[in-house]
Amino acid sequence: MSKSDQAHNQTHNIHANEVNIGKNVRISSEVEIICDKISIGDGTVIKGNSKIFCKNCEIGKNNFLVDVWIEGSLNAGNTTIKVGNECLMMQNTRLNCNAYLEIGDDVNIGQNVDIWTHASSMNVFKGYPFTKAPVKIGSHVWITSRTTVLPGINIGSNVIIGNSSVVNKSIPDGCFAAGCPVKIIKENIFPRELTDEEVETILKDAIVEYESLVKMKSFIPNLQLNQNLQVEFIVEGRTTVFDFNNRTIEGDINEFSEDFRDFLRYRGIKFYTGSPFQSIEPLWYIKALNK
Image (cartoon, rainbow, N blue to C red; front, side, top):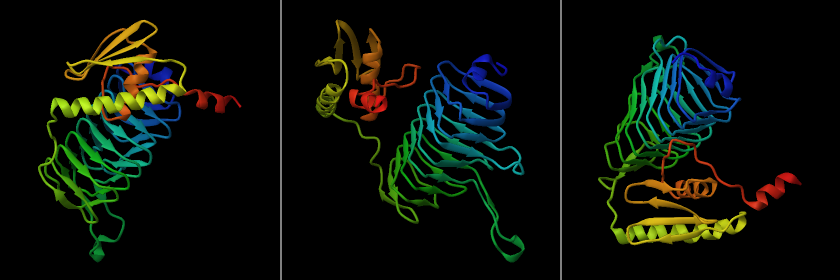
């Protein structure tokens, strides 16, 4: 669709020749977007002082970006970035797309991460380098805080990059890498299939933590874990069933079950429904704001 009323209602700071905004997208009023073409999929949240300046930007479904800069030079031509689905990008991340930048699904990028597709600032006639090369990041990747990824790098899928790394070489699938410059620490370790017993232990630990957390909130849930790795979440006679085998939610989806869904996201267990994650504020937080 062309630039829609929905986009106008969310922010007055989208400036683009072609805008495609999905359902349940939230864009804070502080966000500024200048593109030729911008596409944002269902359930994506862009907030804080995020800025997007490039020719073409495609962001998929169920992403969360806060205080992220996506930028390409006006001199670089076809500046383009493609971001997949279910990604998390945290504060002060800078994504340079002077050359093509592609980020897969379920990519988590910590604070103060820089990803570069271009590097040049000194006199090339004196032998200093001009570098411009695309960067590709696979799916199910965690790039932790203060890491820098240099131009021309490919990072495979199922990879974790340790804190404060400088990624100056391509990284294969399934490994843990870290360092300045980066080194592969462990190979072929991700993903790992868990037994039902291991999954059950993780769920029991999560339920115990959540039951402690909600004591600071205004409701008391009843959580029941059955042998099929399903959790029945019951509040005020309203039942929501979280199926951890199929990663689906059935029953009465309400503000209380959404609070549990957001807690599970914090624990690394993500259920996507097409709506942004949201929590019920604890009583201490409400009281502090009202003082």
